[in-house]
Length: 417
Ligand code: LLP
Image (cartoon, rainbow, N blue to C red; front, side, top):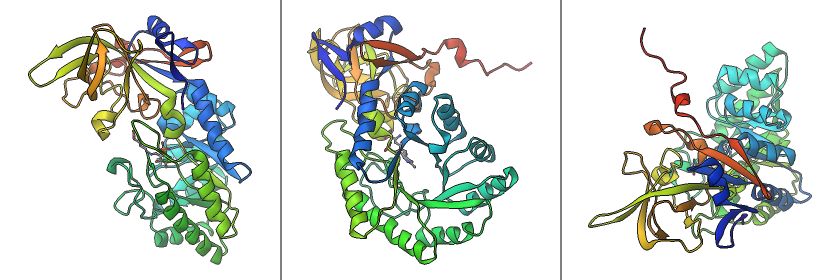
């Protein structure tokens, strides 16, 4: 459910016409809806009801300061994977105490900054990480809270690039290995054990993999209890999918109910933290692009647009489907089945293939469900400046990232003396 709808035959974001935004900022541009972000965050929060829970929005999905700030104002926590994301959370007014530092390769400077800024906990994924955090915490004379991320070896049945809970993935640790780390961690003077972490993948559209993963995490937590290690929280990661085309991902209520029932069946009430990214931001953003030209050959009809794989790489990288709609309802110009392609010099540069559209040069198109893993995965390939980003809030819109200037592309470069 989102707030991108047609009114008076034009696509709107909340109460603002997309055409008005384009007039002000040009194309391509990302448009986010504040009401949609808030609705999705509240859906998770309400889903858990009275069950003790925290929502740590996964910053990687969309790290625009305005997005983070909207969620921070709701009282959201954050899940980060780099010093850069930490800096964004701080700049956006997020609470560092409600921020969890995940990721397989935390650098010294990142751990130092995280500890100095009072990050809530680290989800650790290797022996080396425990040593590093322990050593830096000792030097800074602070306590570091940690959870160990276990890899439950569960198939999330999603695209192989975004599946993370199988043995062949680099993420997490086996239960045996994690246990060794916990036993060491409890003796480390500057380490406090917070709980257990797990994240099995992204764009998960069934509940079964979550059920299997949680069973393993709970078995493991009971083993920890046998060693007198108290699990104060289970960080169950993110991954709940969204509808791009015809997927029917579970609603947050079903997801939360299953977790609560599994706990209940063991007589447990362990607080749960979740790290949703896509399910909060995905449908809260669209990418607007303008048709440059139409071109036919013997095999295909191409609709060449001004957005490219450098702006939205998901179709090229994951063969992802994003719905494409005309900003003028029912379109304008010649109706045809088009391959919607961008200006980049790669055959992988497409937004969608075989799409029924009525367009002519100059028409505007919206690529939907682009709020998560859209702009954040952008690059400057082909020396293309990054697009503007706009957030709509009711009848107002705000430019939350200006269009990049060509000179900015070369700012850090120089020629030889
Ligand atoms: N927590 C951890 C530890 C993660 O690695 C991720 C995502 C999340 C939470 C958030 O997952 P979400 O709720 O957004 O599914 N670029 C890919 C997705 C990569 C996901 C990486 N990790 C895509 O565009 O599909």
